[in-house]
Image 1 (cartoon, rainbow, N blue to C red):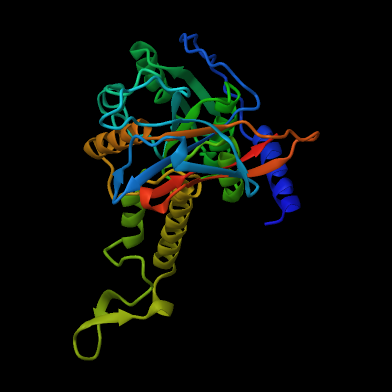
Image 2 (tube, rainbow, N blue to C red):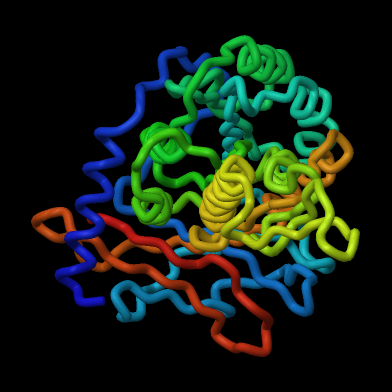
Length: 362
């Protein structure tokens, strides 16, 4: 991609992110969590694995950082300490954003409650890891900014499910939440966990969601809800999603159940399968936000309370094992310009790097 093209895309993404969605209409309570903002500091989150096991104890010498392909000096590296290292205080705190779809077609009470979040995620996390809670359907609401206060989190999660509404502006909600969170400060590592069925009710391009998340440096972790219901709708009487032949009432000349080909199937049956396929495609797009933004997706056949605890535990582990590489751009443009940033491992033998890319504007 040329430099000029990259600038154009980045500018359009930021403009869209500022324009779409509804402003968060719930005031953020003062939790005592203070963020010192340095406008020219850039942080890039990532994970490093060796045979599916997180690699710990890496320092600045293990990484290389490039802006528009040009090497940059790494200012610091935060990450999990090794077994022989003392756990030092981290330079960059972490914010885990819970973005919950509370549209009437999605809400499942008890699936994501305070007790589950506290026991599966919050307990055991570093003291500088905070949780914020947003909810959306037609509009986006912020129920609490970053906090560790248990009473505040419980009240926020309870209120999410008191605001059930029609519509599901998923893409707009993700972009607006990223913008709202980023407005609190740039030197914070953020991860956004989105609970939704992926069935957006608007026509916003998913490409803008990906580009916006990358521009704000916030990886997305989609948790796909209701996948089993979509499959059941498509199967109907057990026919599955394929348009192959299906048994129908009646007998053929040999006395066996008659089989109708695709063109002879009832129109309602075909429409049902077509709608189910379209819904699965939307869920696939939603799930794909994970790997495309440096996160990962959780698209399982069935999600119940037990599975939800496992997902939240996995996300807590990701927060604990995350590396953050920070640097100060060597130059600042007279006009805001988009720049591609990439972190690489200094030696491939160290492991495999996940994430480590974003677009910054300075």
